[in-house]
Image 1 (cartoon, rainbow, N blue to C red):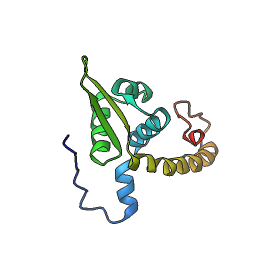
Image 2 (tube, rainbow, N blue to C red):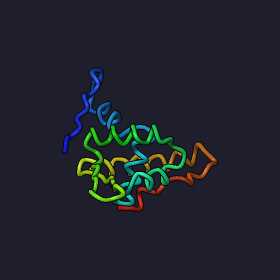
Image 3 (tube, one colour):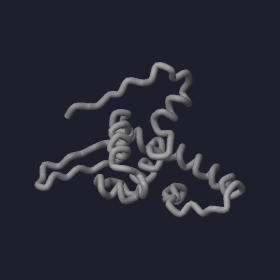
Length: 127
């Protein structure tokens, strides 16, 4: 199977920028958390967990995460075709970082907002 390899942006100046390019942002981190909580999922199962993402954005984000070695895409020779996504070792190694961000955010989000984060899969309870 061909392994995707994406070229890094030329303007990345430090390791933090590399990390944020790989797993930062709204959708990448949420997909990682969903796969961390559930193990292997099919596309439609991920889509259901992501609530308001469009198909185009989900497909593009999954492709990025596969190219960056965060997610593994496994297709089974079945009819109808079956494809499952799961975290690679590199992807699993991101989870504690996201848990730390989640714990930090939990403290300050409560101070800054009245809203409850109902869509959040609490990543800190999957330790």
